[in-house]
Image (cartoon, rainbow, N blue to C red; front, side, top):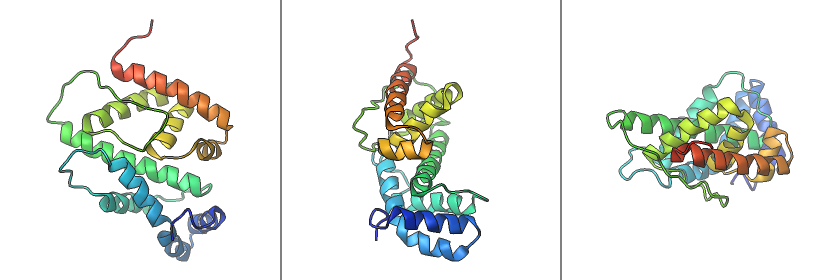
Amino acid sequence: MSADAVPASQVTRLLRRWAGGENAALEELTPLVYGELRHIAKRQMRHQAVGLTLQATGLVNEAYLHLVEAPGTSWQDRAHFFAVAAQVMRRILVDRARSRASAKRGGNAVHLDLNQSIDGAVPRGRELIALDDALEALGRLDPRKAKVIELRFFGGLSVEEAAVVLKISPQSVMRDWSLARAWLTREMSGETPR
């Protein structure tokens, strides 16, 4: 059964029970969320370099271990859980890309299309590193805008789901989304503001 077929309230209840220390809740939760975690992993890995040794199942398993070992996480709801899972997967992929690229330093500005349709396509190594660096810089300037990009681009959350996670209106999500995309595009192209 996929997480979408399970009522969000059931997943939220299990997350809260698990956060409260009930290991049985984790056992109930795992089969309910695993399919969606695999979907997120596949979306994030879709455009990874050919020959990458990490596969979607491995990414899910590694991310799941991080999530299970996170002490005292207070899960808000289903959307929050999947947003954190997507963030963990992004960190794993970026760390692997950085380690692969460490011997290949150099390069110029990177072009990455952060289109509004969000097909879940995560960029390859060098582009992923450039996006991560730009997203970190944006996070220092405006953490909420960086979080909107992270939730929508990496997590595949809808405007409404991102609004729930961030506790803001969908209109604010769209405004942040537009401004953040423009800022990231400029930052990654190497253009300087006028």
